[in-house]
Length: 329
Picture (cartoon, rainbow, N blue to C red):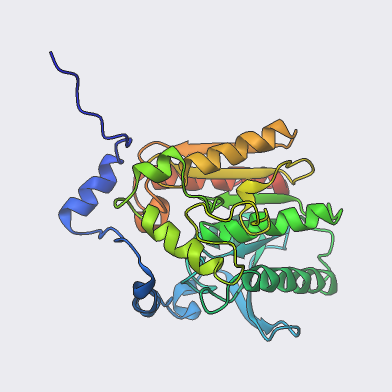
């Protein structure tokens, strides 16, 4: 009797498969360098006023003096501010804007009483490393000044990054750690893009398939590292690339803030995210890891009404609520 043929890939969540089969959901195809302009044009966020609608959320815009970068600040209009999340959007370091997925922070604002600050960082390949990281650093300094001058300087400040935003949030946390700055209360990494080498078992398994596949990942990393002279996102030049560029390269994560990481089992980033969580534990850092069975990349955003997406948001919000001392309602 022959054994079943193995694909090397875990099964995808059945609800997600059904949405794709029905045509309700279209999977993101492989992104090559020539696709970036079209993808940007197709992924512009809706006006923030439409997204907020009648929610109890205030929105204001500001400009960072050092760079002219735009920042948006969202605050609760119905409860006092109990903390702040510095939220860095995803998009493979090549697409997206500060409102990308902003609706998934609304629970934090309305139910946890958190302010959310999101920066319009520069994108690669036009602006390779360290442009985006520098932008986030300037925006974080602006955020601290904003909180202090608004009377909220003592509230918890959490760094959060989704996918490529996780690259920048983790790199920013490493930068602050290495300067001896221990003021960050937490680090929330949602399916973070952490390793430019792109050679893990999960990266190889999702080559040419999946929501953000290995080839798309190479496109993003190549664009981001284009100005460093260190080679491509497939592994060359790794000796010259630092952990500030590719956080998975950090040799020691001692002193990092309490960290939450979640990722799908059916995506490229699974193994690098699990490895990063293990490295945090090895360094004595308080870390929580959730690997969602059958979850593809950004499953909770592309299919937010599935049971898996709802479970992921609940666990994420509970971690954040514990961090700031607020029960999720």
